[in-house]
Image (cartoon, helix red, strand yellow):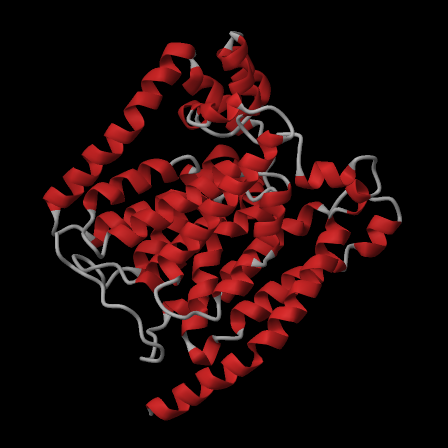
Length: 383
């Protein structure tokens, strides 16, 4: 039974160079279409590759370094991220344009690479490349969403640490991931459930997470005692799309709460047989992907959280082409926007964000138990 699996893996390997070349060409064409209005503006190349530093914390960090009111900057920015996490990017305030965006982009690349490698890089994996040359990654890097890439790194670190019983790293990972609460809650529930027989480990994780987060919480309250109220207001006025937008239309705030609860319950249902057991990386990656369904999804970059799951499909020879197909279809959808761009559209349509759902849908086979196909390194269960 192993022979057909080995033969399938060999055939996949033979077709990888051609698939990689085709995907790169699709990515270049799709990126050109997606950025069509910017490519026809003055200084477009500098904007794409060098500046300005238009990343989420920029107004808050600028106010901090200029001695201005951080509270006023946070209110004016309408950023849907907790203030303590935005303050964590203070070192970027030491950089001027154009180096600011270069640094933010490089850190974003590093966060994505480490996050995907933690969950899908434990053996030669043909699914890594199509996951990394995908619409969510390119969309993130061309308009840096470093907060999202940081959150992805956090959830991946936590999921990597649990089966290895690295409780301190699990706590730090979850603390980092809370920069985007809707994306971390399904994984948080599954991590607690699967670690229920390790109360001391969970306590160590909680202490480590609190130790990592408390300095930034104290700093945030010192600069803006009312930041929690501002954060709530910013969330209420942010742009939603996909299922969250539908939930708001149906039930307002409670609609979003119900959607989040459904995502959490779906994650727990998938993990129902894993109580007190090391978390399987396939399951961990799929649970992280489920968080995409309940995130605000204003743009395809939210699909970042489905990339570890998409990459793990490459470890199953029967499904090894799935990451390539999913990534290619995402770029074909971007290319389909060309007529609208030529007609003068200012950017991709709002429903572009459904690309992220496509990656989640593609990852669902991970819910099925894998056949023993490609070798993976043993996971240590020592404390």
